[in-house]
Image 1 (cartoon, rainbow, N blue to C red):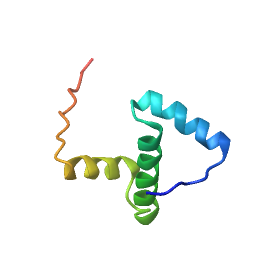
Image 2: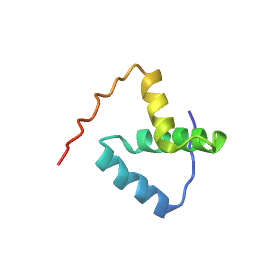
Image 3: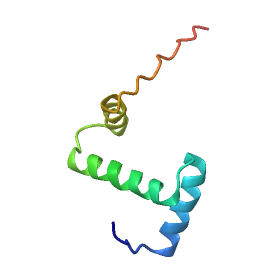
Image 4: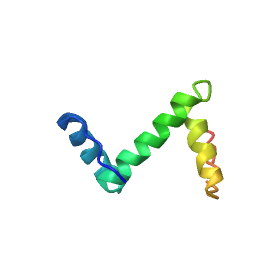
Length: 70
């Protein structure tokens, strides 16, 4: 493990996002780094599909959303 130097403003954004996501600051930064790397190395795959694939690979099965006809 190492130390990553980032700008104060970015650190503040990570801190705020970590509260919303119920993650530690380090876990939020790691999440953004991982997802950013996946998006950058697979630019033709939409973000939502990348997240879907990662969840599926982790064994997470999200329930289907009910369609509400009005």
